[in-house]
Length: 182
Image 1 (cartoon, rainbow, N blue to C red):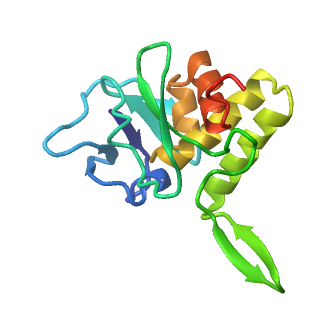
Image 2 (cartoon, rainbow, N blue to C red):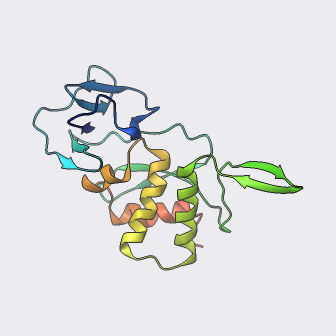
């Protein structure tokens, strides 16, 4: 499981808002059904805004899953055999394939994204389709996609070393509608 701590915060990290089974004790937060608790001796890594994270055993990606009613989900297995749920952000033709509101404004239909995570994921996938992305840009693109499906922020996934090349490439292909080699 992933464990967060902050020296001053009395609240769970922002990425856990709306997450089920958030547990807390002694200034640490994790996601697991009670009575599961993290190990005592953890290797802490600084993320952002004073937060630190650690792994206690393997990460439970299923426990961190967001309720994502706006997209079809695909599964990508990374090089360590972890299974990641990836939303199909774009269709094979590059058109957003996620649920967006269609609103009539001044006689024209306008599509509105559900939230800022969805907007970032659509932009990341369109960038993947439209150009050659360098290593860093690819990594930030898959992190935008993963933040849509997980109650986990990019900094946490990064400092814990949970992202690998298989996840980046296959995840971006799936999210961008390129799952059949198009």
